[in-house]
Image (cartoon, rainbow, N blue to C red; front, side, top):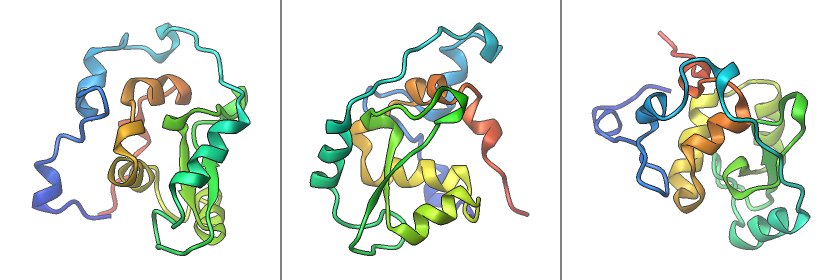
Length: 137
């Protein structure tokens, strides 16, 4: 995904007003030193997302599934900041890495800004999210 001048000026602030780039100043430098977190197990969160969103955030298709990002070895966390609404095809493409982490994060920010929490996303992922974003030349 090419970043346009308009998007480059965006600070991509989350629901608490934290800019995506500022998370580096809010957490210890080494991910191994980050606070340990518990994952949330609550099926009602997925149900709520299905009630709120009826179209795929990527392609606009009408049938959607809840995609849990940042599952890793700890397992998926049922919380609003970790769930992305995608159609079955786009959901499959996320798992086969057809589109990138950066695009997925942008879609969350674009469609569900009220539930974006950059710090929590970093903690759930266990890595610096900007390091996972692949830039195409």
